[in-house]
Image 1 (tube, rainbow, N blue to C red):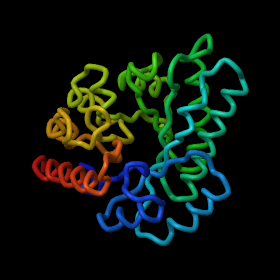
Image 2: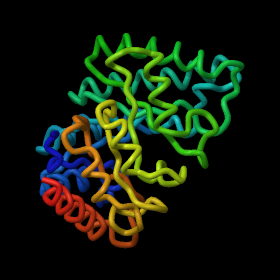
Image 3: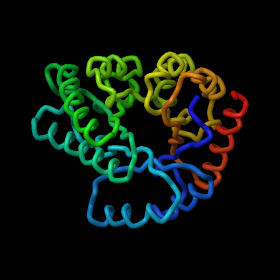
Length: 260
């Protein structure tokens, strides 16, 4: 079983106003960082490459977060190209930081191409070639039915990944999205545990794990002995982000100890 005591935290969930603040907190908790790529401006690049080496916080994954606004399956070829370029930029950023995984989505909302599955398979097949060159896995997150009409479930994304057929393109799962689909979270992650590159933990309404009604104990039991990927906290911080992280970290680590 993967050493799940080494938890990660998505950048926007970690407390602190600056990347330096966030890294300091994560270092104190011996956690790794999932960096968020909202576009590599000159200032952002400087912040990343000057700040991260100063801390003992590995970056294990990077989110291609501009895909919230870009359209990999948009109607215009230009929209599609811009989205793919953002994914490639994120892969290269991950490689420079020695991160082995990036987070992508097939599309938010409605696909605008005639055959979205064929287009998606072609796009990720091409991305897998760059992934092999860089040693970076391209993970595809299932967004849930309330965020997309295309491949909303983990099962759907796994079907896409099988069609691509590359070790450098893999599915990932988010516990809240699975729950939003009305599915049994433990059953879904247990079924696909061996395939998943990453498991993001958050409760209903994007709360920290343990602040809602998702049964995380059952989720962690379901992946025992099967899951070999990354486990990452991803949630919307409340009024006290420091307390939120402390709660989530202690809650998840306690459940992990019980599973062991």
